[in-house]
Length: 109
Image (cartoon, rainbow, N blue to C red; front, side):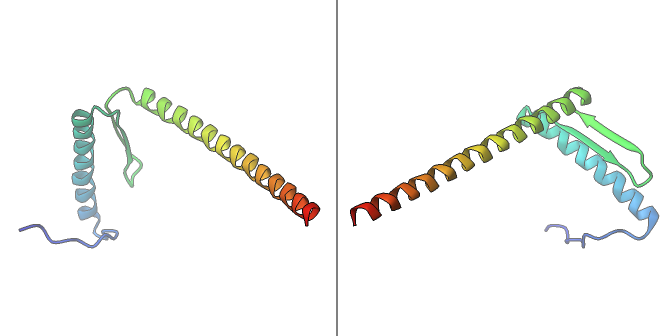
């Protein structure tokens, strides 16, 4: 028999909240390690507590993981810009073809 579901909302009791944060943080880091091992994935986790304390874990160097992430964002943005340019070009082509079609249709009718 499984556990009962809990309502996801802010825990008002400070001690309970801190205990839950610690347990869930450890669980999240454990899952990140498992994902890295099982799937040979590069994983990085950054967590800030409510007091501002930093917790981090990375399967490789955190700096390398963040650099790779940022490079991926730049490439993704580039790809998105290329797609928009291609769509605009195709849109222009369709408009030009429609215009030419209407001219030819008018000429032959």
